[in-house]
Image 1 (cartoon, rainbow, N blue to C red):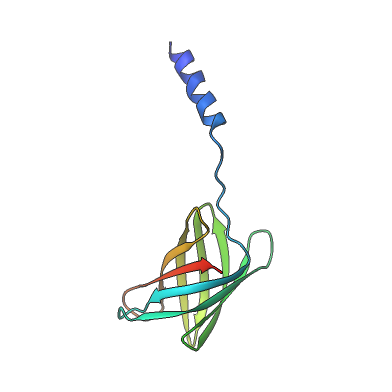
Image 2 (image 1 turned 120 degrees about the horizontal axis):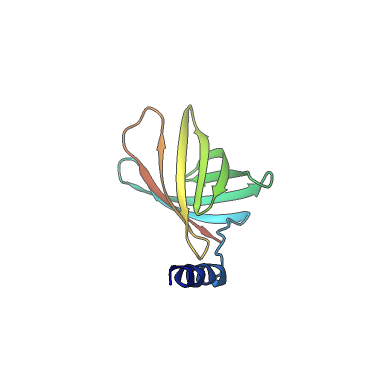
Length: 119
């Protein structure tokens, strides 16, 4: 009986479609909150650099920053430079391609939020 149940479970697992998350190169609309809770908006552009990495450039409220990014399953992360500080943002990739995440920068308390929506 155990063998039949095991075989059935394996069959179901193999029949289920694999849902691979992806992040598309291109332009995104940015909506976020700063460390103090105030809102900001702008744009971001993702450019593929290799099979596993990309470059992301933000322009939010007149402030520009650039980072290196990568996708790991449904997690998309970027390390970036903002003025004289280093930052980190981690997004969850949603099924529709929207990126929803949190970010922080060195030397500051707390975290902000950010959503990227493909244009």
